[in-house]
Length: 539
Image (cartoon, rainbow, N blue to C red):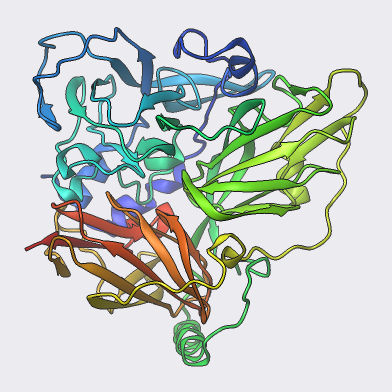
């Protein structure tokens, strides 16, 4: 089946949805406060996407706590029955979810809810998860940000087995590292806006450390997500919030020249994705329970951008955010900021001191997105009335603010150079994305690795973005250190996703300490699906 045929199935692909009105009993460990405020809260690419016409989801419900010390660190089985009770059980299933009164959407979820239940693991304490797929489409569940074996990670490109349709897969692994992680589908969607992360298959994970810092009164988990996706012709992506804002002249010349040539040939701009509804914890602004606070409280917000494609901002009028962790990793320099900017799949943990009584909108800076639901009400205990929004002053997001001041990263053992580029509308109207001129093949799930790693070596990836898009770059199964951004050196900031600005450069270092196939890609679903991936392996 040609890609041109299945790509245009998108004309009938509408709405992906989400929900998560009440955590119910899915996470028994949650306190009533958390329950209230958080989340009450192989095939060829073509064959796989053809099969993926229906959205799929997973429900995660806390099961018993029986553990098996004799199990190896990683064990997986594709079986129809369980040998013994699992610690957690997840069901991927299509469900109707209500994001506002009488606004009900159908999407694939984890357990019939959006977001999926909060999973709280203990660092280093082995767990077993049974994943049931109640849909007609094989699925993958990716443990984003965790250092796990490739057969557990949840990416078919690395060799992880699919969770078969109407079947199950049982996995055992040791959660690590500590901090805010998440789980989500890793199925490719292509032109199917009901599949992949356009669906409701997103859920938060918190891995508890034995020495949790904790200078706060309570935690609130927030999952940001858009629904009802539709295709449109491309437009410019705003990136004036990034600092430094300087671009590299040869990258800009290359990208703009390629676009001019394409348009001169009569090519339209490549497809992009827009959304009809926006939610936090599965509810549009004004339709979920408010976050109720007391004056003087220190609230630790864990914020996950669960979008398939969007960069999000978040502000709370009259308050500031003390950023203490990014992607689950403590930052070397906690810094206070008026606005959070969060790339696709990034997470930020920030403490807000509740010192400005009122009823406020915690929401996105974009008026249109906020008016279509991207916000949640914060209500002080002794106040009532209509929630107020006041836009903060313009603020630039600078990763260096959170890095180790005056420090420099150690020299790498090897440098891997990568240039990212866009071929406008080159794939049946979709942009084709390349790394060093190569698009990840659509004819096979596992491609030939582009780089071979040696265990224990420190690698530096020098990234050059020859497009005008911001790319949220993700490295699987490893944590990386940001060592240079837009020409500015830095050290100490550990992440697993990084926003790389248009026509900019950045460098990240990682230690090859987790053998096995390792996927490197842009976390923007549309970019990943159309070539923006590559594989590493270990020698």
